[in-house]
Length: 97
Image (cartoon, rainbow, N blue to C red; front, side, top):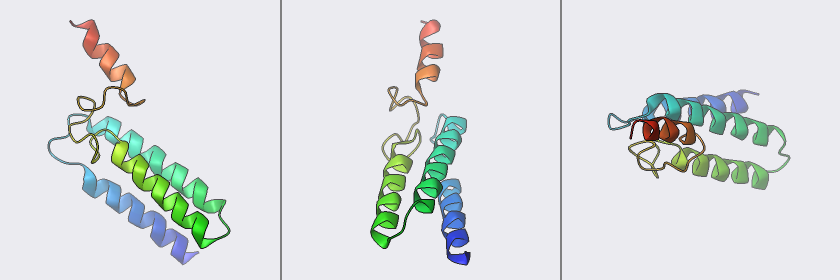
C-alpha cells in the first residue's frame, strides 16, 4: 500500500515540475497530465506482475511526453495542434483568422 502511494505521489510531483515558463497552455497541460496519471493508476491497479507494471510506466511516460507542454510539444498546442486536448483550442484560434 505504501509503495503504491509513493508511486502515485511521485507521478504528481513529476507533473508539477514539468510545466515550463515557455508553456503557452498550462491549463491544457494540467488536464492532459491528470488524464495520464489516472490512466496509469488504473493500469497499475489491473497488474499482477512487474512486467505489467513496467508496461504501465512506459505508457505513462509516452502519454506525459505527448501532452501539450511536454517534451514532444514544449510550447503547447502551437507545437501539436492535432493533440486531442488541443483540437478545441485550435478551433478557437482559427475563428479569429
